[in-house]
Length: 524
Image 1 (cartoon, helix red, strand yellow):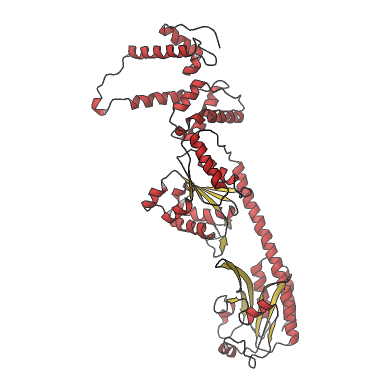
Image 2: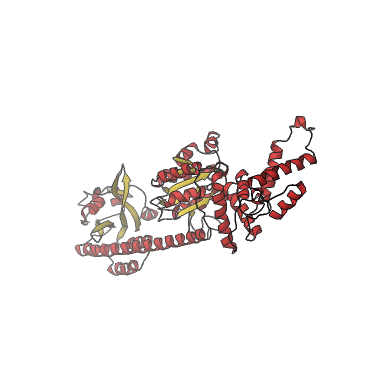
């Protein structure tokens, strides 16, 4: 045995920080000895099988100078790529923690599995030592030699194996530190994205919203997948955030993906990440959203937009918790809860063959229907005031008032864009109000237009007579009189006719004068 070569190897692996490099250097250091035909290293691995964990040895590194199969010295597959602990001589070393030393295989062939290979390669002796660190067997280091392995050489292999075990432990520690550092960077990057996007809160006391929130409370403490259903703009992401914040995963991030915004060619990389060089533009390794969400929650918005080709891979992650990055063979395992959202009828999409039925069932373990704004009109004034206060604070303006008449205008509108549309309309009104009362004339116009369309004559009666100008004036006079009566004759102030009609007091005074109506001059 070349002791000088092995000493250099021990010094080299002590400075290595990557486990694959350490394993390669160990076997190549032994293989540099002229008489060594083959040096191999197996590592202990554990896997769940039939609901119990089993340990086995997996061939992790191999080197040597085989005469009849030179390339085979580096292969990590084949009959001896895996051993059960306790099986044959390699498994026995791992099971007992004791080395095996066969000085002359020509005499002692008890442990020889392939006598023809031993003869063809002229193997004379064999030695194996366990890799032990802190009392734990990490694996087995073995060598096949064309010369007899003496007792001194066998003792040296023991020393070498002890150094090798320490080098493996250190390299694993460095890799874990690097993994945690990379994970921290991912979390920080994602949190920076999250901080840049303000989130609202779920406001309202309507029965429809209370039913949805009761479902949130029931499912939050479980790990069940949730499918949030509802029209665009109803606040499906807020429901997902409420589930996450009430769950045991709340200390880990809620990672979101808008499936409708991801180009089809980048879906797999966005979900599962990619290795450097996997495709043009992949300049470095990148973790996908599943990896970032490990231990937390992944919110898949617009789930119905996922291409059919990716649906099978998504189903695998949901079922097995495993995936591979694009361009990488390594299988990674994650623990992620998925909350999906859609405004589509996924059951109908599945029946039509546009969405995998098995994926639909996997996602919709617990569906939650978020009511549209038109079904919770009693929540609209509180929502409008909340959005107005937020907008005023952001714009540096004073908090505006919401007159009752304007609140009724908001409640009468159908809100096809739901809460998102309400927020935008209120923010525009705050800008126009300049600290005064909020007004929504465009909604009143839209309401009048909608009513006109709804009561318009059919195509068969298009020649029906239109109301005359005098009829319209008479109708306006009746509305003004009714508003005055309800307000006790007062025009302005809280509860005045101007507030009820959504008009400025001066405008209403002009209309009253033109209509020949008198008002009480007292201001409220």
